[in-house]
Amino acid sequence: MKNLYTARVHVTGGRDGQATSSDGRLALKLGFPKELGGAGDAANPEQLFVAGYAACFASTVRSLANARSIPTGPIEIDAEGTLSIREDGTYLISTVHLAVRAPDLGEAGGALIQEAQRYCAYSNATRGNVATTVQLV
Image (cartoon, rainbow, N blue to C red):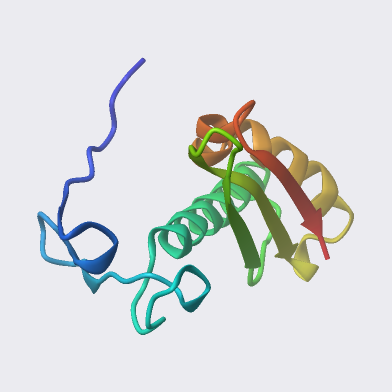
């Protein structure tokens, strides 16, 4: 294995705090969503997770298409992630759904989406742990 990049983020206050990356490019107020009793006025970890997953997946699709000289056009992903609690009180991201729009991929789209699930870092990190569906819409 060859390491390519290490992201560094400092978080204070947990879900009701602040997240700042070491390079200063990320600086977010964090908060509980209304559904968890918060004000719903700040980003939350689940949003950050699915945003990262969607961005990584779109880039993976684009990279795989480019390697085959397939023009991609715009790639858009609507991502959903569900925070759940088990009976024993432990929390988990139980499901992720990615709805991928990439009309310019044409007939190659389905195969590229399937292949991207093999190469995407988030797909590899969650495989076997999170029920994930990816749909080409």
